[in-house]
Image: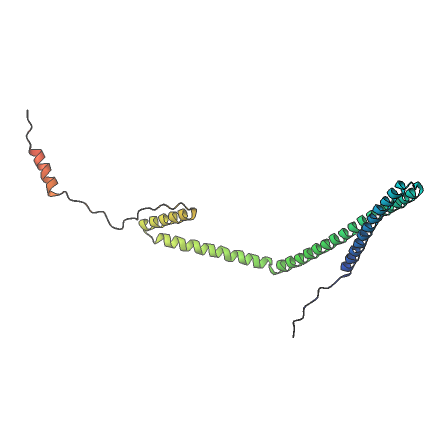
Length: 202
């Protein structure tokens, strides 16, 4: 069995707009017919005038003038129809926007009803407690670290910040052992003794 397709509901406004557009199209077709008559009457007047039949040429020109007056009337009617269609369509848009605003207001009312003052205050208290707990944990960890460890933490923080900015600079690693004192080599010591024993020449 095929799925049932819901057909869009045609409202009275839709029918009114459709009727107006049909009338507009009919007027445009009528205007085309008048344009054809105008050209034909003009050609007839020229032919009569060329044949020396001035009276018939005048009659053709009068018929042409009458058709021109009809064309002007249809122009006015067409403009009125266009304005009416535009007004109705814009009014439908306004109604749609108004309906959307009403729905939005209803949603806001429901949200405000759910978010009472008590619930907001409770949420703020819970957020403040979470901040205090985070601060206490940070202080506790800081107090349990040595000065060197805290320096290493700050250095790692600076590196992370540099990475975030795209300006990371490779720094040498912090030594973990104490520096070893270097004893002078025997050769260096002997050289110093020999240098002291060299007699000065007068």
